[in-house]
Length: 76
Image (cartoon, rainbow, N blue to C red; front, side):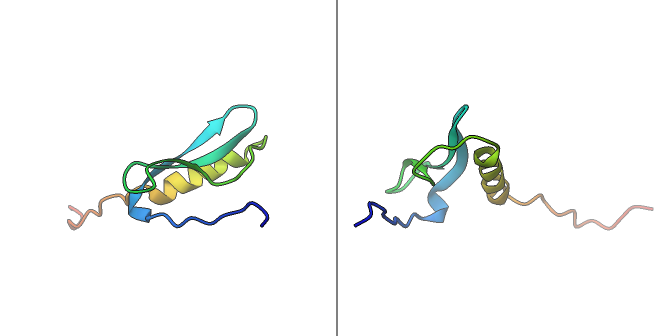
Protein backbone atom coordinates (compact mmCIF):
# COMPACT_ATOMS: atom_id res chain seq x y z
CA UNK A 1 0.00 0.00 0.00
CA UNK A 2 2.82 2.44 0.85
CA UNK A 3 5.29 0.98 -1.65
CA UNK A 4 7.46 -0.79 0.92
CA UNK A 5 8.29 -4.45 0.75
CA UNK A 6 10.19 -6.95 2.85
CA UNK A 7 12.46 -9.59 1.37
CA UNK A 8 14.22 -12.32 3.34
CA UNK A 9 17.72 -13.25 2.15
CA UNK A 10 19.95 -16.12 3.27
CA UNK A 11 22.79 -14.77 5.41
CA UNK A 12 25.08 -17.46 3.99
CA UNK A 13 24.64 -15.85 0.53
CA UNK A 14 25.83 -12.43 1.73
CA UNK A 15 29.34 -11.57 0.57
CA UNK A 16 29.90 -8.02 1.85
CA UNK A 17 28.51 -4.51 1.96
CA UNK A 18 29.62 -1.58 -0.17
CA UNK A 19 28.94 2.13 -0.31
CA UNK A 20 27.13 3.16 -3.48
CA UNK A 21 27.61 6.79 -4.50
CA UNK A 22 29.92 9.68 -3.63
CA UNK A 23 28.52 13.00 -2.35
CA UNK A 24 25.27 11.26 -1.54
CA UNK A 25 25.45 7.53 -0.97
CA UNK A 26 23.77 4.51 0.55
CA UNK A 27 24.85 1.11 1.83
CA UNK A 28 24.31 -1.85 -0.49
CA UNK A 29 24.43 -5.52 0.48
CA UNK A 30 26.21 -7.71 -2.08
CA UNK A 31 24.97 -11.28 -2.43
CA UNK A 32 27.35 -13.39 -4.52
CA UNK A 33 25.23 -16.54 -4.73
CA UNK A 34 21.74 -17.90 -4.31
CA UNK A 35 18.38 -16.55 -5.45
CA UNK A 36 19.27 -13.07 -4.17
CA UNK A 37 22.48 -12.76 -6.20
CA UNK A 38 23.29 -9.13 -6.91
CA UNK A 39 23.32 -5.77 -5.13
CA UNK A 40 20.52 -4.88 -2.70
CA UNK A 41 20.36 -1.37 -1.19
CA UNK A 42 19.27 -1.32 2.44
CA UNK A 43 17.60 2.09 2.09
CA UNK A 44 15.49 3.56 -0.68
CA UNK A 45 17.34 6.85 -0.79
CA UNK A 46 20.93 8.08 -0.72
CA UNK A 47 22.06 10.50 1.97
CA UNK A 48 25.00 12.82 2.53
CA UNK A 49 27.35 12.60 5.47
CA UNK A 50 29.28 9.79 7.12
CA UNK A 51 26.40 7.38 7.81
CA UNK A 52 26.58 5.28 4.60
CA UNK A 53 30.31 4.59 5.10
CA UNK A 54 29.88 3.91 8.82
CA UNK A 55 27.06 1.45 8.17
CA UNK A 56 29.07 -0.28 5.41
CA UNK A 57 32.14 -0.54 7.66
CA UNK A 58 30.07 -1.92 10.56
CA UNK A 59 28.44 -4.60 8.40
CA UNK A 60 31.78 -5.66 6.88
CA UNK A 61 33.39 -5.81 10.34
CA UNK A 62 30.54 -8.00 11.56
CA UNK A 63 30.89 -10.32 8.54
CA UNK A 64 34.68 -10.58 8.88
CA UNK A 65 35.79 -14.05 10.03
CA UNK A 66 37.23 -14.11 13.55
CA UNK A 67 40.99 -14.09 13.94
CA UNK A 68 42.54 -17.52 14.61
CA UNK A 69 43.11 -18.34 18.24
CA UNK A 70 46.66 -19.15 19.30
CA UNK A 71 46.25 -22.34 21.32
CA UNK A 72 49.93 -22.78 22.18
CA UNK A 73 51.00 -21.87 25.71
CA UNK A 74 53.37 -18.90 26.08
CA UNK A 75 57.06 -19.71 25.71
CA UNK A 76 59.37 -18.83 28.58
